[in-house]
Length: 339
Image (tube, rainbow, N blue to C red; front, top):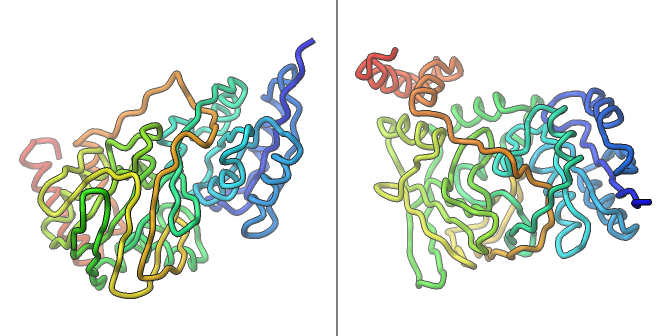
């Protein structure tokens, strides 16, 4: 008789701003009872997911499934690194960057069904100032917006986008010195992202070529740009074609130190944290076991889809940046005779 695997589902009830009753029902309905025994647990406070995941490791649980967004995944996964316990994901956050990179279905039913396959692979993770991250970490505008978003009453990707559009006009880039294996380089940057996975979430590909299995971090530095350049940057982010040229610098590193002008906001997996002037970041290869979707392939959206998203998004309508983006996008669409 085959021994059933033990699984714990750790649910963040507030992630993504949606109720989780349907997910609980689907878990109980769809999980393979011949292969698994399971418990469903709900987090009660920030950091509780990590506490519960540590308990799972101590109880020799085979699989811990994080039900939430990238912040919830970070809480759970940081207690599972360097252990035999594997991570599963049912994505229901605002961005779902790691889940998207791993081709985890965003449809709850399919995500639960994927857990039943229990196809596990060891992936990398990163550490920023002694704290783990699994998708991206960084500083600059994206970290600042993470802090603004964290204080918002409403959740979800639309709230995040509203904050970004409102704040981008007045944001002041900073000067950073980056030290890695190749030497020391100084940049005036809008943002610096160190990516373990390819995207922030919501198919925003900040590091299109990033791999979870190469033991390297993909570093993207975006230098200051003007309004006229913003539409193209947005399109390149959305369709995975951000290039290593112009005001975008890309390189890979196993570890690096970044020195900035003063203390300020950082982010790891989309969650903000206050950080020092000196920031140490490194990759840790193959130390997290995770359920993957080996059968699926997900391609970045097409150029035309990206143009349409940028042009049609009503959140931009009443901002100078938005009017510039919309006009530039319309000109491109008109040129292609596709608008």
